[in-house]
Image (cartoon, rainbow, N blue to C red):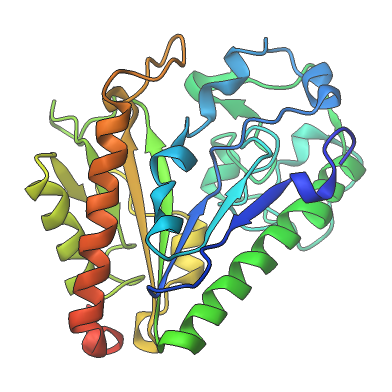
Length: 293
């Protein structure tokens, strides 16, 4: 796409040998902004980054060292959001007619957060004017579809080799996120689409392990998981998907985007978490396909 060669749109970090039945995915940490996109935007180069999951790919970087592949986006979420259906599109954004199969009525489209987002955080409009519909459809064909094809292959390969697969979809959330009706601001949220995308025991173990590391953790509130978690989680078939949201206040200054001194300690804790969750699946994985709520 323009200034970004296809090979640089996303990449898979592969271990020499996959030793654990996990696949890690970081779809929102991309920070390579095409110049043509920035030229279309009314936002400056700093403001447009507010919807990034800042450095989440680095936080989970040791997953590969522990024996799991990791897919990560280089393109930014503001440019294309692969954690949506392929055609969640707002017709008011585009010059030209959308295809008839476009989902123009979803809540995410209404909120400005479709496959081609209209907004970044705090309701900041991205574009100066309308986007050519051909541009939007090209992003879907040349980035979205290859990205998901790659993710499907990683999950299928893992499932064939191990008899089950655990997808960890890696995200971050603004530091001011709190539970509905409460002032509590969780450090982590584990999402399993209310028990439908992963075995209940796996979700509970993920929560317990993070709490044992000293973090405040909630499950499914206020984030239960997006399209990726919902689409790829089929626990009765041994395909489990968890979304992990990390509070950005733990590791980054959200104004300057500078990593905080505790960044390395969080990486170490997440490495411990991954290793412990992998041991749990190794010890008890035989029942996971049957353990969905």
